[in-house]
Image (tube, rainbow, N blue to C red; front, side, top):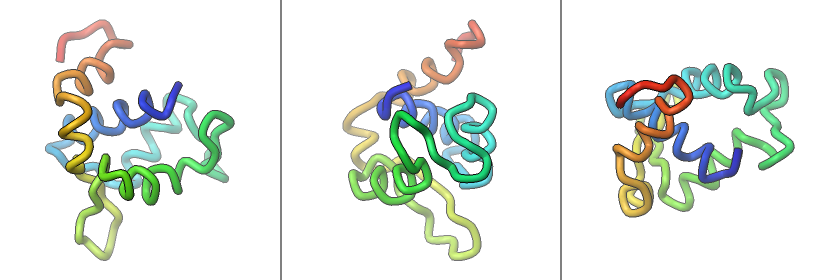
Length: 101
């Protein structure tokens, strides 16, 4: 999976969860699809997944952190709205299940 694929997966997950993606929920998703290691959150393709999501994708404005100080949550960022239509992200998430968004 590429970084763009990871982003589409996370954005689709956020859409399916009422436009909010709790960090714990996203980690569970990435564990299920074997994108990261349970202990270190490291992936051979893009290194530290936690840093990629919480710092890099936020800095690039693909993800926006919520203002909830108790739990890190993600929203669609301004950059995501420019780069990928919501239906494309949903299609990416449901495609492996052979379902319609």
